[in-house]
Image (tube, rainbow, N blue to C red; front, side, top):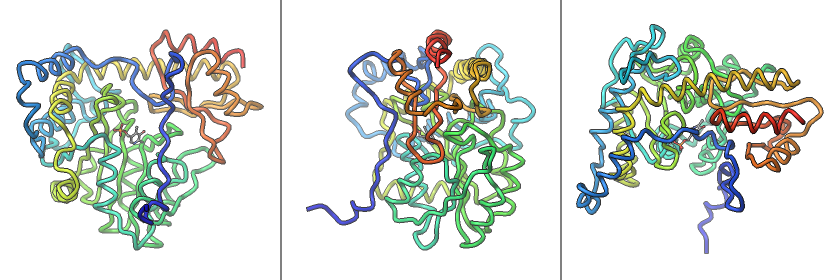
Length: 382
Ligand SMILES: *Cc1c(COP(=O)(O)O)cnc(C)c1O
C-alpha cells in the first residue's frame, strides 16, 4: 500500500527527548538560556490583542521578518561571538563588518533550517551527479539525499578532523558537482576560516552551488556572509534554534543573492505557501530586536565551553577545539556508549553516535554553569 519511494528513506534520529525522568538535556545543542522576555510579551500580544490574526493566513513572504533578519545580520556581522554589545545596541567587530548591507530580498525563511535545507536540496541539487559533502557532517544531508534521490560523494576528514578542502574540491571537479558542509562543522565543532572558505569557493566548479550551513556560526569567530558579495553561487543556511533560543518555535533561513532566493520561493510555493506561521514570525521579529541579549548569552556559552574543554583536558580527555555550543570529546580506554550511559545514570543526557569512526566520541552541548558543574562531577570520575 506504500509508494515505492519510501524504500529510499532513512529518517534522521534527533537527540532523545525522554519523558521518564527530568534529565539535564545536553544532547541536542539547544540553548540553555530562555528566549528574551520581549519575545514572550510579543507572543502574548499575538494571542490576545492580535487574536483575530490567528484566524487569517499569515504573510507568505514574511517580509517584515526578512527585513528584521537582514537588519540583525548587518548590525551584528552575523557572529554573536564577536559582536560588540553596548547596552541594547550591537556592532560588528572589524573582522565581521559587512562590506555591504544584507537586504531583505537576500533572505529566505522556513520552518526551521532543516526545512530550509530541504528546499535548498530540491532547488539546487540534481540527481544526475553526486553531492559532495564531508563524511562526518550534519547527518541530515544524507537523509535528504535519500529523500530526493541525489547520489552522495562523501569525502574523508583530515587526520586532525578538519575538513579536507583540497579533497572536497577534487571530488567536486570530478563530477562538476555542488558541495555542502557545515561551518563550524558538526559533530566535530571545528571551523574553517573565512579565508579558507573563500579559497574553496574560488576553486569550486563554476556555476555550481556551494552551501555553507552556519547553524553554529554565532559561537565562532567569523561568518561567511561577506563572501556573498564575491561569489554568486554561495548559499548560506542559518537557524534561530541554537543561538536565538528558538528550537521549540522553528525558524531557519537562507542568505543568498536575490535570484537564488526567488528560486527557493518558487519551490516553497509549490509545496507549502506558509511555512512560517504568525506566532513564529512575531516571536522571531522580537528576537531579532533583542540580538544584544542573545549575543551576551552566546559569549557566555563560549566562555563556559572553553572552561569546560580545559577541565576535560585536565582530566585526561581529548577534546576537539570547538567553535560551537558543544564539545566533541573522547577518553582513551572508554567507549562512547559507556560514557553516555554513565552520564545518563547521573541524570544528564549527552549524545553518542554509533557511526563507525566516531563511536568513541561523545558530543556534549554547553549548558548553564550550574548544569556544567553537575556534569563535571559525573565526568571527572570516569
Ligand atoms: C541544528 C542544526 C540544523 C537544524 O536546525 P533547525 O532546528 O532545523 O533550524 C541545521 N544544520 C546543522 C548543522 C545543525 O546542527
